[in-house]
Amino acid sequence: MDQIFDVLIIGAGISGIGTACHLARECPDKKVGIIERRERIGGTWDLFRYPGIRSDTDMISFCYKFRLWDQLKVMADGPALRQYINDTAREFGVDKKVQFGLKTTAMDWSSQDQCWTVSTTQESTGEVKTFRAKFLVCATGYYNYDQGYLPTFPGQDLFKGLRIHPQHWPENLDYSGKRVVVIGSGATAVTVVPAMTDKAAHVTMLQRSPSYIFSLPNHDKVTAVLQKILPKDWAYRLARKRNILVQRAIYLASRRWPEKVRAWLLNSVRKQLGPNADMSHFTPRYMPWDERLCASPDGDLFAAIRAGKASVVTDHIETFNETGIRLKSGKQLDADIIVTATGLQIQLLGGAELLVDHQPRPISRSMTYKGVLIQDVPNLAWIFGYTNAPWTLKADLSSGYICRLLKEMDARGMRVVTPRAPAGEMETDNILGSLGSGYVQRGQALLPRQGRGLPWRVLHHYGKDIQMMANEPVDDGSLEFVPAASRNPVPSALAA
Image (cartoon, rainbow, N blue to C red; front, top):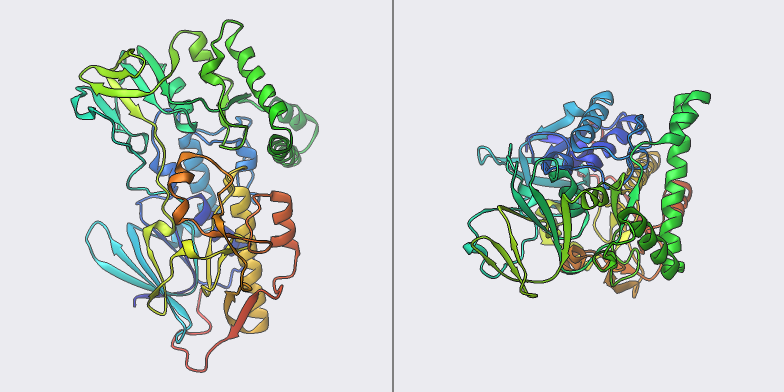
């Protein structure tokens, strides 16, 4: 047992760094540690290196509330995002708390000792390291970093060219003059296709069915004007409120008036592509926000199609062959490079085993409390952001709630907190059940269950979550608090 922490955070991506910064600001007396499997800060934004990698929403609402994005570029590219996370970590001194290269394998709560034992492996050496913590925060995201989702394609070994999954993009890949086929129609494909047209001979997006793609300006002209008449900080705070409200309005309108929002989105695409566009490639079979919408900054995908540098084919794969892909329609797509933008695989808690008193506690058999704590699991929080809004809006709320909870426990002299649900509260659907995205459907058995009502039901509603997590009393009758045991091998006060 080499280190003991008041709070141990697993993951140094945007969620873990954000949580550590909240703790540094609001609970400066806590000894905080961060375990990170990779060798650098950044998480998702360090892992993904494919062409065009960028935020999937506007940065002013995606950034941390306590450290606003202060540039007029609406969607940040991967390097800018990594820099933002690293600069934030340095500003709050949490970069010095990260221990790198450690894969978490197990987390075991001891009721007798009132603490967590976290087992890790130093991947470069195989050395096992163990940590202890009074409170644990899992900020590991929701997908498998080792392997993206890759279906088995008929004849895939016949292809003589290069086949790439975006999650494992080769460093310094030269695709100049190459014919590229990108399989997929989600956010990754919508990003990669226009980005590769700068050098590739031609890029084809091959999709089984279309997704909703909307164009948004990548330069914030309104905020640029406001900066000239208001203090810069005010201008960006107004931009953040505006963008959050607009995003929320579009989502709610999609649920209430799906046909009208569908018509609006499709009309926008038609205007981008021109009157002769084949809209069958851009008309999804589902309604808006049954799956996530894909953003195209400055309509870059549509511009690439208009210029003849990119095209979209809607068809099914019959087989790979030596020169590319033969489709079920009989059409042949020749390619030098095939990019399989086929999605993610859900993995929770970074793949680590969760135990309570040495007994496995699968998270899929539990509900979440306010989307932050786990039913019947003591002193454990997890950060799981929004899927219908910027991830970090919920991550920020969750981190703030964790700080409120820890301060409440300290004020009352409590050591352990455990969410306890009433009998019959759990339902069969999971916390992402409303989304029809492929990765959600494939991973639905791994996700926590929904409850019948609050605080056991995840609403994906920013306004209601603010009220529930930031304004309502911490002790709402659903939490069981326990003071420190008389036999306590973990010190009650740890030096920072």
